[in-house]
Image (cartoon, rainbow, N blue to C red; front, side, top):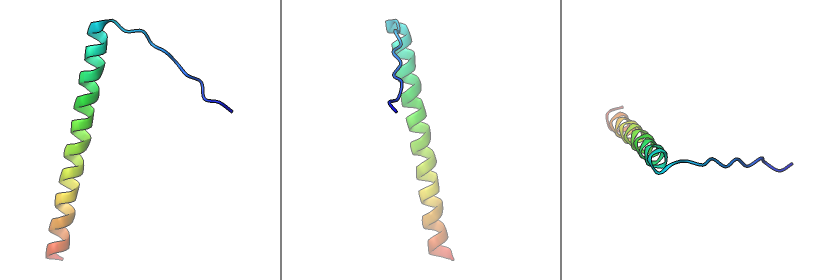
Length: 47
């Protein structure tokens, strides 16, 4: 079964906000992954 595709039409202002939000979300995930990696390295070193 094929997935349904949706199209949304945004103004330039809305496009800008969506892109900025996605960038912030990506940075948030990246920062959390960095913290997890650092914690795992610390744990491996001292256990």
